[in-house]
Structure formats: structure tokens, C-alpha cells
Length: 431
Image (cartoon, rainbow, N blue to C red; front, side, top):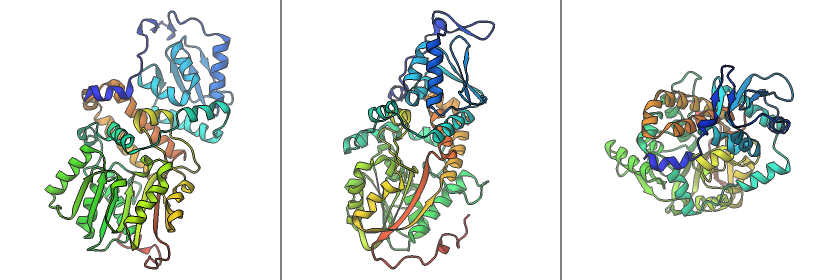
């Protein structure tokens, strides 16, 4: 297992021979003095990031402050090589260098990331250099073979790892918190009920799920709403877990899991649901996904897609796309409509659960930190740092509004068998 995941964080280590610290807390050695060019580059980088309230502490202990205002956070760059990599491409290299322990954050990681994310969002995205980097690190098309590779990289690193910090249902998507102080367990069950009520599921109906994870939603739909479910997923370990869990819960015959891509869906169903898969599809394939939904839904069918998204089109963070979620692309609502409009699906409802995902991630990070010793035993310290950065960075992006969480409910054009109000979503009680 270690060998499989060392590829995830294969960054050259900091050159230890040149990172001695003297009595004044400065890094000394053969890295040379900080030049005027170094200071200028550091200032330009901070300005390009929107001028976050962050001091950049260089390898000799010298600080470069933000162009405007006072700093509230400090980040230390251990060596000159790390500094030049960071200046060249901060969006990618910050994660690489933090993982390799060549960058240190003074104080708590999450507040630092929120400070940087907030400045970046306010500054917007632009400039020839940024455009070139976005083109260079654009996600590749998620062909069937590449989709399998991407899913294997992230989801097949071991069920035991995810069991350390997910809830008992193994739900790895945004929860729904009926109250701010709800537990993760309550919120994940509430999310499943929220989805089922939006779909207006009735006993005896058939449902197809695209991208079922460890199968919790499919089991919940069958057990509590009396439907039969066919669920598709290309993660070998997730499907094996889901099948065994369904067998133990006596749901064989009511839930069927297929180790197959969403493009392999066959049959006709009353409802289509996808929770947390669209991010892995790629916008190029959105019209094709719409065609698959059109092919598999009955005349009065309806559906729901739950996905991370954005206010406007933009690529995934370069480091996340490279090291954590290869091929991922969170769409804007306008881009999501390319699923529905060509097939004349009517969008019935859109709900944004952005703050619910921030809360979900907070719970995941808390549990991850409690299990850090075991994670270190399973992998290595670099892996631990990478995943802490991923979870904390995700909290920051949802908190400051860089990412959204959309639930879009839809039905066929002209279908009048739809709810008159939203009362059905809440009349059963949120808890």
C-alpha cells in the first residue's frame, strides 16, 4: 500500500545539509543571501495572489510583507530552490512543497489557507501567465480508461483508510445538517433522506445511481423507501465493500452494484440520481451524460444531480487535480445546463449546500487528525501532510465561496407529476 501511494506525493525532499538554524532562528548555509531580485519576486507573487495578509519568511529569516495592510499569517520557505518553484507556479508548487516539508505554516493551517483563498477570490483570475498555467494544467479528457485510472488513484487506496474518518455509512460526499450542531452521522442520514424526498421516491419504483461510492445511498433508498436500485461505480474496492454490506443487511435482490462506468448504464428507471460523480465526468462529456439520462429515464421520470461546483467556470486547483483528484472539474450551473437543455429536461429546483460541505469537511478533518498515527503507519508523513492540506484547503474554498455545492432536481419536459410546493422536503422532519 505504501508503494502505491508514494507516487501521490513524490516530491524531492528538502536538502537537509543546508537548512541549519542559528540562535536567531534564521536558516543559514550555502543558499546565499536574499537579493533584491528575490525580494521583488516575492512581492510580485504576493501581489499576484491578491495581496493576502501573509508574511513570506525566506530561507535566511528575512520577511517579505504583503503590499497592502498588516500581515496576520506567516509562511516560511526553507530553501532558495523551494522559493523559485513557489514563485514560478504557486497554485501547484505550494502543495508540492508543503507536502515535502519544504514550506512551513506558522500557526494553524486552516486560518492561513482561508486568508490566502479569500484574497485570491477577491482578486479574481487573470493575466497571461495565469492563463498559460491554466492551459498547461488543464484536465485531460476523461475517457473510459483514464476515468478508471483517476478513480483508482483516489478511491482504491484502501477502504480501511476511509473508514478511519468517514461515518459508518461511508458517505464521502457533502452531508446535510438539519441543525448546525448535528453530528456527522445524523447529517449524512439527513442528506440521504433529503435526496430521496427531492426525488419523491415511492415503493416499488426503480432507481439508477451513477457513481455510488461505498453504496450507502442505494442501501438507504432500498431499505427506507421501498425501491429497487441499480448502482454503477468503477472503483473495485468500493463495489466489493458495497456488495458485502448489502448482503449482510439482507438487501440482495433490492440493490445491485455494477463495477461499470456510467456510460454502461442500461435499462429504464423511474429516477436517476448521481451524488458526487459529476465532478469526475468532465464538461466535455456533459451532453453525453444527458443522453444517457434521457435513454434510461421513463416518460415520467425525474432525477437529481449533486455536485461540487463554481459560481463561474474555472479549473480545479492545479495541485488538487494533479495529486488528489486527477481529471476533476467542478462545473458552474451554466455548464451543468448542457446536461439538461439539449434533451429538454426541465430544471425543477436548485439548492446550494456550500456551508454544509464546509461543516462536513470540518468533521472529516477532526476525525482524520485523531487517526493520524494510524494513517502514518499505513502510508508515510508526506501522505499525511498531503491529505491534511487537501481537507483543510477544501474547507477554506467552501468557507470563502470559491467552491459551491449544487443539488439540481430535474424532470422530463412537460411532466406535470411534480410537487406543487417544497413542503414534501421538510414535513417528515429534518432529523
